[in-house]
Amino acid sequence: MSSKNVFGNEVSVNEQASEKVDEAAVDEDGFEVVNETPEFQATVQMEVQAKVDANHPDGMVETTEERIHGATLEQEERIRAREAELERIRAQAELGTQEGREKRTRDIAAKRSAERRAEFQKRAASVDPWADPERNDPRAELTQEQLAAVNKQSMRLSGKLDGWSRAAIGRRLGEAVVGGKDLMSAVVAVFEELETAPGQVVPIGKLEGVNRKEVSIEGTVTQLWEPSSPSIAQVGLIEDESGRTKFTSWKASDVPWIEEGERVRIHGAAKNWYNGRVSVALTGWTTVHFSERGR
Image: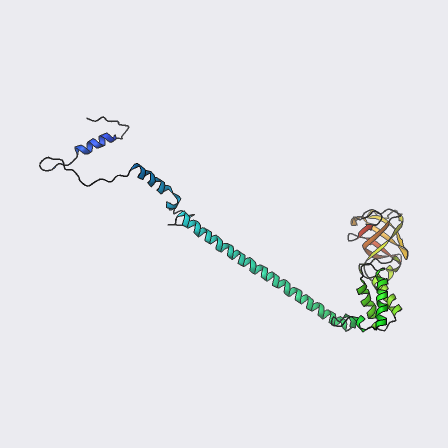
């Protein structure tokens, strides 16, 4: 009788084999019936390969929400990659449409702005013929002698007027001469006009004739005195070769401190009146340049 190794309810392999032998069928003559049909059993190598195949990613099919039902990982990866590519193409198409719309909007706005500017210039031409954008350069209407004189004077004035080119000055002179002024009168009128134009440094002696709220001046601070209000940082006089005027620097403007005797250029000063005379105030929009300090 075979030995038995029992652990709990488990029966050994030998016992199972013994029971199978006891239960074997016999024929009518008492001989054991042998099943001639071969029993196919997996070899160890086949069992190992089966486990490998069962656990290989290509052979796994998951049905969770994150996975595609009935697809292998390889198929799913191809599907996901295609979906991502289509999403990227859609995003680029939408972005391209937005950028195209923005560009068309900018182009239309620029076109309308140019049309409004041209229309304004045409209306201005009813008052000043030279404002007509379709009118040629007035210098084309000058004689050779007049043109030579205008070019000479425009070269001379360009050295006195900062920020104005010879061409711009020559055009203004040409307008004045074609309009009937003699050359010298045209030179004086154009110089005075451009000298006090916006952005130009105005001679202090000509501040009264400037019809603007903000001016730029350059001069030397010749005198400082005690402010009459705690909201005033500095008050004094600034002058150049053409005249002098009072200036007031407010504390709120945060303008750098100016020493007496310093030469400064002041841009964007507010023009005021003090005791019937013109004066300037340094505000938060004012900038001060110190030529001697290098800034």
